[in-house]
Image 1 (cartoon, rainbow, N blue to C red):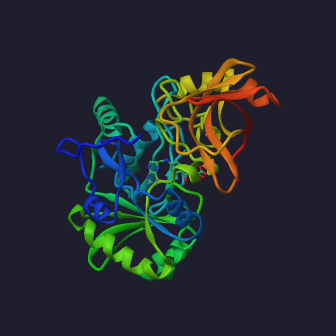
Image 2 (tube, helix red, strand yellow):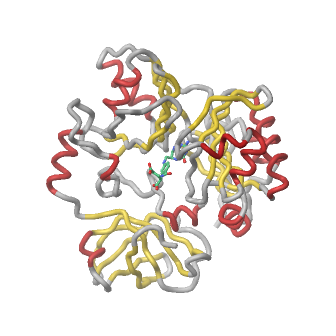
Length: 369
Ligand code: THG
């Protein structure tokens, strides 16, 4: 059932917001205190563009938290359990952030912009408050703030052609999460190889919020030859690929090991970081549930689920499915969720308690495709 969204002064707008509405924006959610586009009204076309062509997404909700000053790297090392040794200017990294209990509180992409400047490109939680409080308590020489930076994603197999048409062939040499500070017809931005899909893509981090419409139009024009169209972080493709959606897939006790982030948690580093003792204890104890894919029986779902659905093993609670949808490529209903290791090990007896009844399901590792 559709629901109207009130647009007012309290919730922040993306610099691309007017352009997105002109392009037919049909639905939005709220993320980092901003409207986040979620649909242009034709999910099948938006999915097809992402997996076969190229799409442009207003993802300005991925706010940047800048750490600027001599202690920028020191603060970043305190904030994340990930080893930042060898990080070079122009290279990004996926860096989970945990609280003192080892609970994940964000999963940003970190960009080393300069020797004394780091951006955390955050998911949906208030890291500017967390990081500035920690910097203050540790009397660090660093400023923590949200700069005027707004990402526009270009995703899909034809994205490299569109971005090369705008900037030149050098963009094809960027490594994953690699980036360059540059400009486009005088519009200051950062070009990065990144984005929340496994279809290949780039993100243009606009560095002047007054020029959103200009950048949107340049991308739309360069992309026209490749059939570019508007889209949003894709509900179905992210399930197929197993990309984590902080807040949807996580709860207030989710730890990074449950999410399969073992490679991003480096407990043997000599320095202290927030959550280190808790994470050591969690690792020693082992996890009892994990983030996993689900293949679900039944007639194709019409849309997504509005709230978490229980996962059961032989009728007993065994976790939750956070997001489910019909996948045209898997030709089945699929989902992702946090499921007990016991249910994951079981070959049958798993089911999902949907709003319209109980459906048999199987767990499956990513990608589901
Ligand atoms: N782009 C930018 N900022 C972001 C996101 C983004 N901030 C919020 C959110 N998305 C961060 N979350 C993710 C989650 C997964 C990935 C990127 C951002 C991702 N993961 C790959 C994977 O899981 O296979 C690769 C991880 C790796 O190997 O390091 O791409 O989309 N600017």
